[in-house]
Length: 328
Figure 1: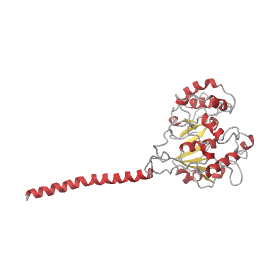
Figure 2 (figure 1 turned 60 degrees about the vertical axis):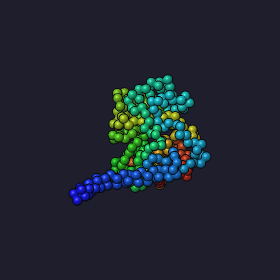
Figure 3 (figure 1 turned 120 degrees about the vertical axis):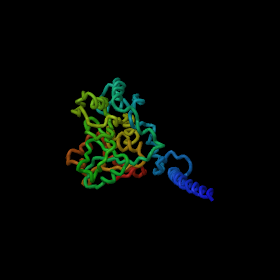
């Protein structure tokens, strides 16, 4: 009888101790099986589906799209790719006046001693999905109430003089990447990527200077000597990527692509889902920024620098291809 009581106590003790771990292990295996089936419903390896299990397989484009898209072009300039191809140099150095190409290696070496030398977006397979909002500065954003929709994205790209304070309801309150060049530079909060668009060698010198000595005060106009931004988050757009957009996508319409086009195609190369806001004229056909009424804001349309009409048609074509969503 005594042995029986001891046996029962031991059995009850073992049951209490072992049931929680077994239940946890069972639940974990069910969870793992469920999300594995979501991320790979066919059972095979599909490089177009992300590990998070939320990405939809990327739809193949038409011949028009597939002949233009080149995944081998690096969107960002890195230390390992310091050698800018001669053809790229020739085109790039003509954008805003001639420069001495022989100084490029020295300038890049100096720059990468100040800012990060790598590309955080090289991994395209085993990573979480990226939903991206490309937010332009068009006056059509005013009164749009797109703020919450914009903020719901993982990455939010803004550009040049974009403003948030006072416009949150229409443009959102978050920013992860802010694209600029020295003449359009603004201060940024800690944690936001400063995305430098270099139109000339001087711009590469400026980004190193603005975080160190402040020696660069002018390009073709006065620029900010020092900028408040996260030095460890600075990334530089690759001039080769700029030329690739000019050659493959805007088909040499305009002298070079607009900042908006560059940001949009950057998103096309690193994001899984893309939403575009604030591009084009407002409902009255006026070209101005959402924070101002500038009667000269659309002057670029007559200078030939950018071809707004062609770029607008290009966005429409990408929408038809299912590559992005466009919000009016």
